[in-house]
Image 1 (cartoon, rainbow, N blue to C red):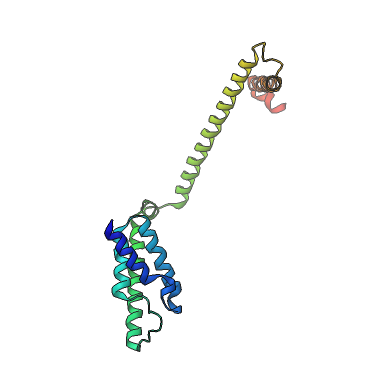
Image 2: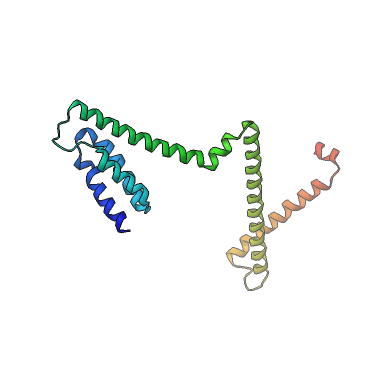
Length: 188
């Protein structure tokens, strides 16, 4: 933990956007944000890598420093190597992800998306059925509550009675329609 804090402090002093030249401020801000994220996640390896890159690679040119052409090129090489390492680690993380492996192994995209659509449709139907069952149980509890003579004339029970009678009528009509032979259903 002490190592993490020490490395973070040293690296943050070197890559803080206010401590680098104007041309490096956007890059310094990116590195500083990554450093802060690594520190917040207690990722010692990431903090150490950023610290090393900032300290040894001199990713940023300090205020008032004039570099020769060779030093400028070395500086550019270090920055590009750091970017390359960062991108390589991101690519490696993507390739290790389950999503990448699933997509890589797909032979028929249409079949995959059709299967996903069916799975989601089933989930939606199950959720709708659960919601309808919960609503029905709630109405049933309210009806049982309202069957008690003490509560019959309360506003909730009057509304519930009206809703319950409408629900019963709807269900009776539906049952009547389902009990008809198919030829009568088409005519009606």
